[in-house]
Length: 247
Image (cartoon, rainbow, N blue to C red; front, side, top):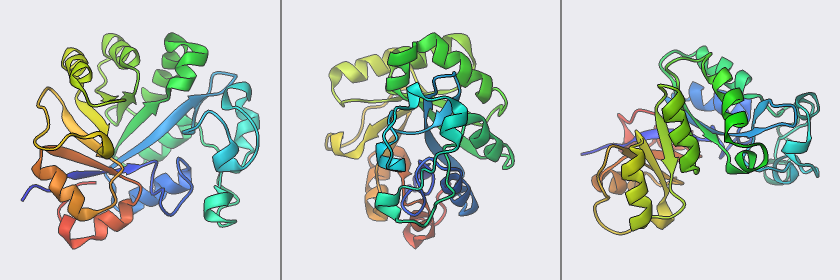
């Protein structure tokens, strides 16, 4: 029976504030081999971990990441009070360098570093990539650069030897044709966008999100999915049906 590898989506985000050092450390401590996190750019060119371009959802404060400096962001609690109450008042916006410092302490673990399109639109691909790659190079062999932007991942391929992952905005013939041209090592897709049946083959391994049901993960593996991305990494790792899964 095929058992997919597991990726901790924004860390152990079902129990900890997403994209926080707490969530990443908890996922790694639970046995995750692969983690994923999102990167936005601050006003002073510091890559930071944040899914949204604003702080409204995770910090419950008004503000745009792109308009704030790193010192200002580093002082803000992103403990997701609306979702998690007051359990994590000390969770702060981490920099990409801090997250990769955590990863470097755990040889053999890898991170899918998703560079968000909002930052690319605000600052441009070259500027964002310059600062992200500067941090990523400090964790050699541990990072896969990920994005919805095919231009960004193509540029990563052009200027570095890093593996790339492209996230499909939609699963259709045009997107698959583009995927064959890009030839990424990994191809991500939302589980709700998948067609029935066996998935298209290419240079890539399929990585499907957001999956928290172990049986669904096994069903997807039978259809050709190699990686399952889940916010419930601890729960999935402890399920006997996924025994032997690399995470």
